[in-house]
Amino acid sequence: MITTAVVLGAGIGLGLWALLIWLLPPRPSLASALAAVRTAPQSRPTITTVDSGGPAARWGRPAVRPLRTLGLPTERQMRDLRIVGRSSDTLLAEKAVLAVVGLLLPGLSQAGLLAAGVVLPWQAPVVVGIACAIGGFFLPDLDVRQQAARKRATFRHALGAYLNLARVSLAGGVGVDGALNDAASLGQGWAFAHLRHALTTARLTRTTPWDTLRQLGAELDISELVELSSSMALAGTEGAKVRTSLAHKAAAMRTRELTAAEGEARAATERMALPVICLAAGFLVFIGYPAISIALTSL
Image (tube, rainbow, N blue to C red; front, side, top):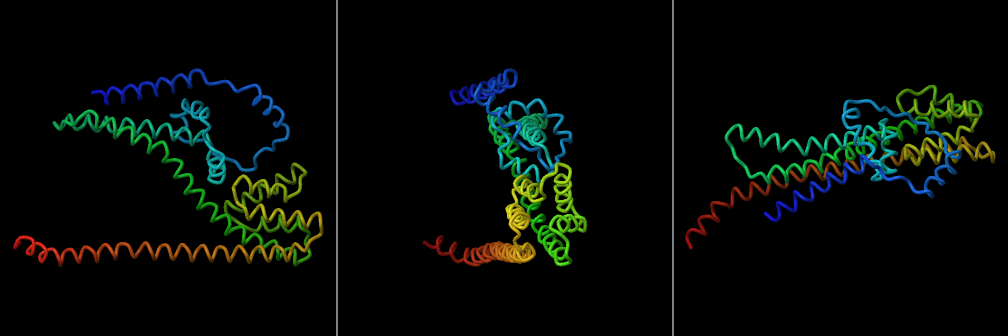
């Protein structure tokens, strides 16, 4: 009874604390407000666009503000969300909705079992509900991380093709800006769409293409694009041999992709050996069990 009272008290206190933060969110300090005002004119708008739709975003909208006060989402999650194309409000709403569903699902299952005549201790759905709520709260983070990893691998593959196209345009006598725009207009897919959008933003805002490409690489957490923008900057300001630099960069990216593919293949081969080992161990147990059983019963 003492453990039950402690668990119920902790749950009620946590719920009241969350409700209080939602109703009365803490105000920012004067130092943070002044820092935000001073740095606001220097900040640049993001290049990438995100989608803020979905039913979970509407159902979990009341929980977005309390979760933001806890420092969510993190900067790494924001980069993952940008490359996936989802907004931070959608992520926080999904986390809240899945947490509530996970918390209530064991109780509904308990009600169904009671209707069928099966009686379980009431502590079981409480413990399972808390575990399911924690798992549902962190499940969207895992999903976004996996999607972002696949998107970055696809973007790196498209970036290698983009470098080859830009190198061909440079070999034909086109300037750096023209080669970047021509190469982006020839490709298809969402990665080339991001590159075209970044270059269009550079033309509209009258900034250099390598600055917008560097910003795009920082937003999507793609170091290869940041390195490419540095090479472009050297070509535009220092007169470096950009065509040779692009050729070396494309070769290095192809080598890195081949190395990563070989590593994934080796890891898949090692994972395939585990079922074979389990099958062999089970076969040995199946053969040796009669002999061991007879030896033990004869003692």
